[in-house]
Every structure is written in structure tokens, then in C-alpha cells.
Length: 137
Image 1: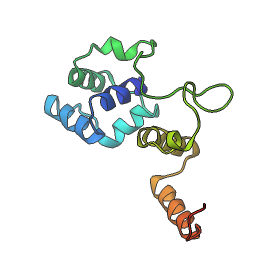
Image 2: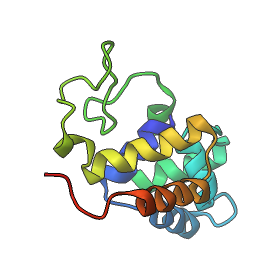
Image 3: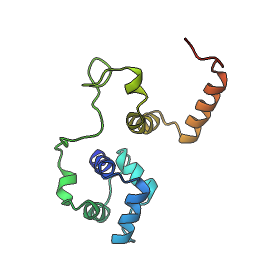
Image 4: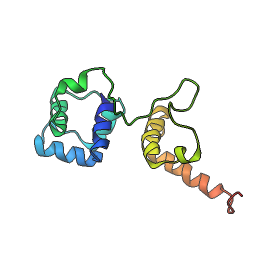
């Protein structure tokens, strides 16, 4: 369910803040916060029926659509291949560093490892300060 919500949100070019704001306009009492939306999208929480109804009305979908186990045909999230890598995409620098893939992969990786965003930022900062000053040829 969380993947369907995330895919719908991204397909409609909405941030989590945008989606939360639209939910508030529909029903301020049942509208999910940005952090709760994040947990729903990552599969950490299952929304109540009232919250799901608000989200469904934002996207003009039936609540049942979110509850079925039928994956979307136009899913944004790439599927992992059995031999490592991702089905249908070569693992090359242009792919690995695309903004869209990183926006999907990094939050998922952090949630799976229990690393906070702040810890990840510190790792990046420490890593970049140890990087060589000259680029490789």
C-alpha cells in the first residue's frame, strides 16, 4: 500500500508536504502529517481507514484500490533482480547516480539499516573530506 501511495504521489509530482497539505484541506482531523506519510510509504505504518479515505480522495481513487495486492503497471520503484542489480537497467554510473533512483533508494536503504538522515549526512561529510583533492583520470 505504501508503494502505491508513493508512486501516485511522485507521478503527480507532489512532495510529502504537498500531499499532507491537500489532505488537511479535505479533513484536518484525519490528515496525516509528513512524518506519518513517510512511515506509511516505507511500510512502517498502516494508515487507519479514515486516513486512507482522505489520501484516496486526494488522488480520486477508491480505498479498495490501495488495499488490493495487485501491483501497479506503472510502478516507479525499480525491482531488484535475482542476480544483483535491478531488472531492466544496467548498473552503470549514469544509472547509479540518477536523481530519481537515489530519491527512491536512499530512504529505503536508511530505513533498512536504521540509519537516521542526520547520521547519513555526517557520513557523507566525513567521506567527502577524506576524498582526494584531484579527480581520477
